[in-house]
Image: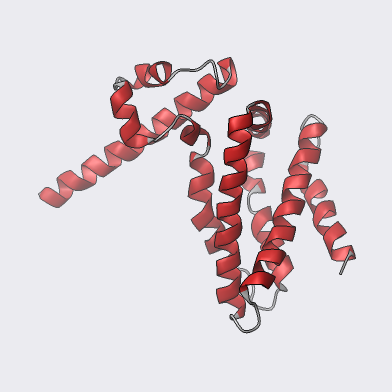
Length: 197
C-alpha cells in the first residue's frame, strides 16, 4: 500500500512539473521571460510560489526542462547506432534524432530559439545545457569505441565539432525565419566538417 501511495505521489509530482513547464513556456512566449512572474505561472496550477521552488530552483529551469531530459535520450540514441559507423557519423546521426522533436512543432521551436536569443540569461544557460549534452555524448562515445581507441580529448573534439555544426545549422535556420526544412541545413553543416578531414 505504501508503495502504491509513493507511486501516486511521484506521478502527481511529474504531472505538476509538466504543467508548470507548459504554462511557463506559454507565458514566456506571450509576455517575454522578464515580464512573466512565478505567481503568474503557479496561479493556473493552484499551487503557491513557495511550492514552485520544490519543483524548480529558478524560472529559467522551466525553459530547459526538455534539454535536461534529452541528455540520457541522446546517449541512448548514440548507443543504438550501428557499431561499424564512424564516430563523427554516429554522433551526427544522434543529433539528427532531435529533428523529430523540432519537426513536431517548428513554430514552437522557432519561438523558443527567439526567446533564448532575446534573453541573455537564457542564452548563457543554453550554453551550459549544451555542454552537459557534449560531456554525456563524449563519455558515451568513449565507451562505444573503447577508451584506448577513443581517449577523452578525441571524444570531446568529435562531439564538439558535431555540436558546433548542429548549433550553426539551427542559427542558420533561425536567421532564415524558420521557413525552410532544417534537415538539409544540418546535412550541409555536417558535410562542411567532413570536407576538412
